[in-house]
Length: 345
Image (cartoon, rainbow, N blue to C red):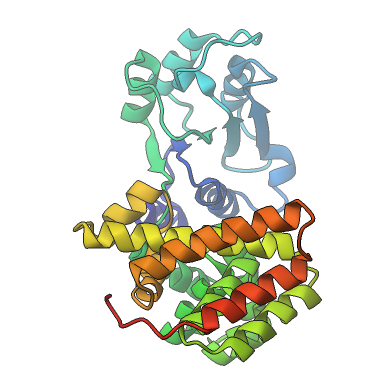
């Protein structure tokens, strides 16, 4: 659906009404920005772009502007933020005339594009006004992207910036920057600028320009523990310290990561697939994929013991019984002293 809507926007095939909602705000903003860029020239925006917030202004004021003939251009774009009357939220102090909304939905002005920007997970389908909005609007539901969709989004966004990207670069970018679209977009802008118009973003550029997040560093650290390469794990820990990461935070990240490994391993052994695990744990499928690969390098006993040891270390540090840095070093040394687990044990 998103591809179709963006394609029509690029071809300047506009709908007079758009309803944007969902739990992925970056996609909502990106859709709106594409729409404004395609519908209005730079000079037109001062006169023909208006933004209203339903938590501050009655919606009828926005609709009155939508019914006003545009100045110095073909059309107006009216953004109506937080139309909470499409949800199950209770009415607020602002008095919205919903009869005017219903009338406008049935007969929108031909020279205006009205965008209802609703950053909500879901709308109240029982309401008449919601049914009307869905019936008469171009609807965009911005849900978190699955792994294949995420990779396609990365590739498409690079192409939109005039550069291509290798599969290896996409894989490394997702590992380095994570799956949050806003973070990815910032890193992609930097990589596209580095590649230049017509260039190609390669894995080497990602390696050079995209810094690891603390979560990615913890993933690398645990991978080094799995390989029993404790000198490398210690070096990763020291690199984190040099980047001003607190040992207590590193302990917390390690605890969260080992819990994730244990959960995905247990669910996988219970017959759950990658998508089902992601849904149950409420994490991105790409993270589940990486965790499944790493979890297979540990036995169930090792994962349980690691979680217990991290909890004990956290208590000792917070109670003042042990130095924070020493607590992490001792854990890494202890984990390195074990024999390597057989894959799948």
